[in-house]
Image (tube, rainbow, N blue to C red; front, side):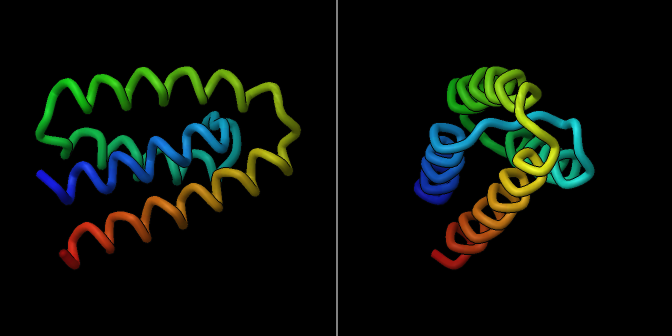
Length: 90
């Protein structure tokens, strides 16, 4: 439970810092990873909250230039990978 909460907190922080949309290759990769993570969240309420934030963020990023989308999604992918590794290490 604690591991999931840590990952969710980091992903939520990422959502509050950046916006996302699957309009570039790097965003598509990130969203595939995030989809898999959200599906693995055992707490339905937390998963639903993440899904809602995720959809809102996708819409926001779609208005940004492609280079900004790429940079943002690459950073988000790195943050997600790091948070998942940290959660597994505990």
